[in-house]
Image (cartoon, rainbow, N blue to C red; front, side):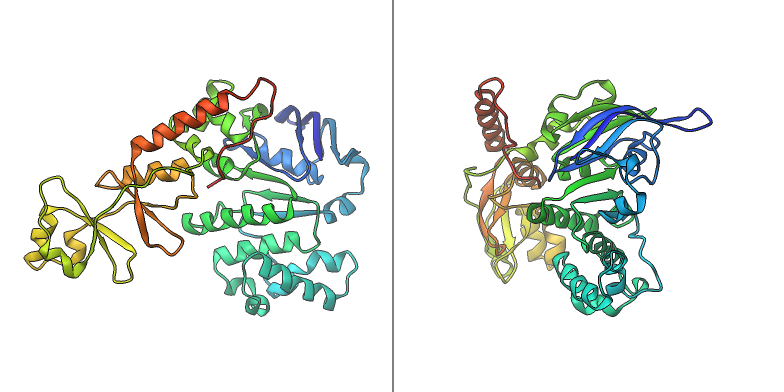
Length: 382
């Protein structure tokens, strides 16, 4: 457990980076520090491993004041992941990952053997172990950074904007990887980001910092979206927080409607009225795009399948969340989101009005929970 009690960081020039911070990071949880640049979130995290010393207040790890612990010993007991991985360019991947175990006294042979197992755990091919960081993609480097932080099996993991330097697709993959690892390992993680969507997706709890290093709100992600503490938090979270809050409601039991779908050879035989839509599938049966009467005529006149159809929007899996279901429905030109099974085969369609009805039902059920009883999020993080 990590506890901040009236912690302040004030620099000699009078700048207050963190102002009277009091919060508790429970053991085995992922807590996100989020806020605009210069709000003290990174400073707060770096005080945990004494990369920055607090000016006043008390910061404890498992009940022990960090200022009374040797900083080297303290840091060797914590994993640390930074932006752009921070790998040592002259060391092979396997030796980068083995760094902390070797510093803690393990033989290099034993540390390398363990490093290979950790690389697999974070989704990297062990064949990459003998490469140098410059020979890896940005996403692979970040995974190596996570592997290095996990190599000594530390109970605490500090992550300082680790995914901000990679593209959105890789970032999404890395976020999913962190959630998977945390479900298995249950580390105590403090994760710093300026991205509120990332914070809500990853955090068990989210601490929103404001200008001057003042903690504005510390709450579960669902409550942060539904009940921002003040105008500053509401502005930072954004005006579309109601839509994003749908990720905390499950889509189990959402009705699926029939979808008419055809392969490309069948398009020219279609007879569609204005406003009708048919889903076109690939030869393997997976969804490709939607086509209407105008598109059928274009196809008959020799236009390519791409030019004759309209993109189908996002796909939805029934074990997902109401946010994913609504996004599929709204992004479809037919107003019917395409639901697929794990093999990508079409199993039906989802409508926006069904999503809103399910939302109303789940909200009513939540409100029926007796006062004082702990509520849990209804859906998985997506």
